[in-house]
Image (cartoon, rainbow, N blue to C red; front, side, top):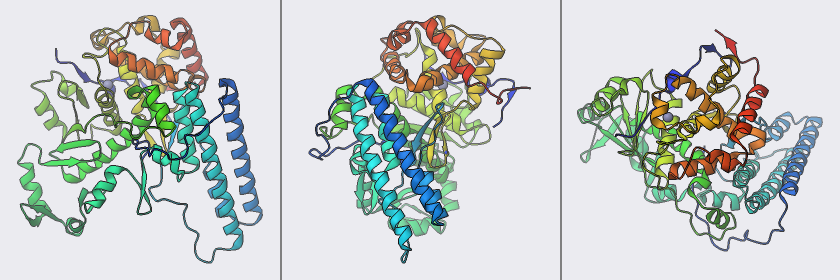
Length: 513
Ligand SMILES: [Zn+2]
């Protein structure tokens, strides 16, 4: 059977109204041996570690508040605002990942800045530098405590505090090149004389002016963009676009393909960081954090993506091989390892991130055939439903949130409709059982709620277990009781904690139609 994900995400919405954050993060990783931060760290016990983290964060917040108050007393309102702005948002139902500046170094002060501003700038930079170093040390401690998820969270906090922490930046896969933080891929492109443009992608620097003037290079000469488009539209997929991790074929346009690539790269970098333990061993992570590893392998080759100009082309192209494609709004085929999307009003970024997440989990390490066919299919969907919440807000990539539309749906069904399939049974559902269940939209809602629960409950208590669960399911070594075994608590306890989590985050955001 053709094993596919035709996600019925659009049909999982509840009868509700709801009311209602360049850069990149965590590309992998070329470490330079002997970089100087693989030194001795005295081990901390788990409870000491958590207390130390809390203390370090509280002191940083207090120091920043004092600096901001000092600025205000001196009439430096702008500096006070900038000082307060670097504090990370705190919402335990959301995951925050800083949008990192490409430019290296703190923003320069204008010439002739008053001495009070110069003094603020020095103090502000020092606080951020010291916090970055402290959090990175704690991240390494967390990894030694076998708390990989916490280590990743601390690493992200370290680079949020100090985007120029060289050790963390290097660890995240960046190198300084011409005063900018670049990946090795970008540096190769730049050295080859190419430039990146958000409309046209990578192209020779000498071509940019022509492209901006409405010309396109074809067959060794410059022709009008309209003529180029006309010719390309006669081909099946006239445009082929390479980004760092994706190969996109489209019959829409160069610009639309590049725009899609930017979004996919954004998801890729987030996914790569958050789910590091999915494709890297604990030993690899330790070597990586300690600077003992030269290079952790970037997971997999370029992902293949096809982007149709509209829904009709999507239906026409995929219809013969994928029955029911017209009911889908995005499709990932494990068989051909390709994600399919279409442009237009029926499509949205949520679907894009959803299907691209399926692709990342399937193609970043060896996986079993027919993942989730026997049991545990819910987490394959649940984790994609989580990643589709990706937004950019106030300098952060944000995932999750109690007010996300799918969380509202999940709460409504649990607390109002009283619809809930206990985990002991839910984890037993394989793909076919799931797809043929008359309540499939409700199953999607429950999967979305449970995924957020496993990521955010009790400050991420189950986050490492979740990644291990995903790893086990994608390896095909799972059983219906795998989640319970990995979390170390019974499925009945997880059911009760889920209900508690949903009740706690219940609020005025749920209204009946
Ligand atoms: Zn899906």
